[in-house]
Length: 217
Image 1 (tube, rainbow, N blue to C red):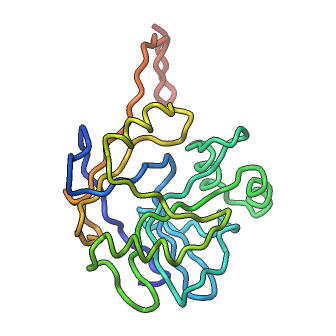
Image 2: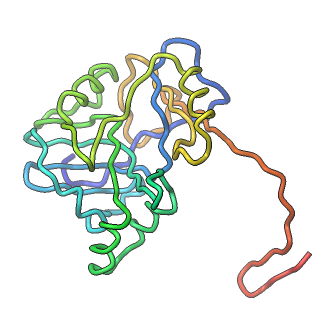
């Protein structure tokens, strides 16, 4: 499993959080990322198995374990310090070494770990989520480029808090994970749900463009 692209476990959509039997985590507005550490260096892969290690050099840190594979979200911050999807995509799309060195300073990135797949030569995917999260919190040190996603027991209160924070918070909903569940690689499972915090507005469309075709209304 080390230093190999992994198709992660995916979530089903839900209109509201389950009332009981689940753990809840905030959903950050970044992109899904698998972090693999072999004791010497870290490799990063998107959910589509694209390696993005080169674009995030600040993630080359030492972890206090022999090896580990983590599932999480890669996020970045804008000039005001808010989590910003456009900023993390700018980081992801950078290809030139000079550009990457520059935006590493101007657009800092951060990996939010929310699950543990592999640790010190042992596969953790068949272990219950409570155990995986407990171990995850024990092995990830406090660091400015990596942290563990917080866990909550009350999904309704968490969702209410996310909604109240507003769209500038960088949180676009919550995830709901069934207690006792395993990590199911390359599967969209009902054991994992996502409740999105949608924002609505009334807008007027002034024109439409597709390729060379344009149409003003």
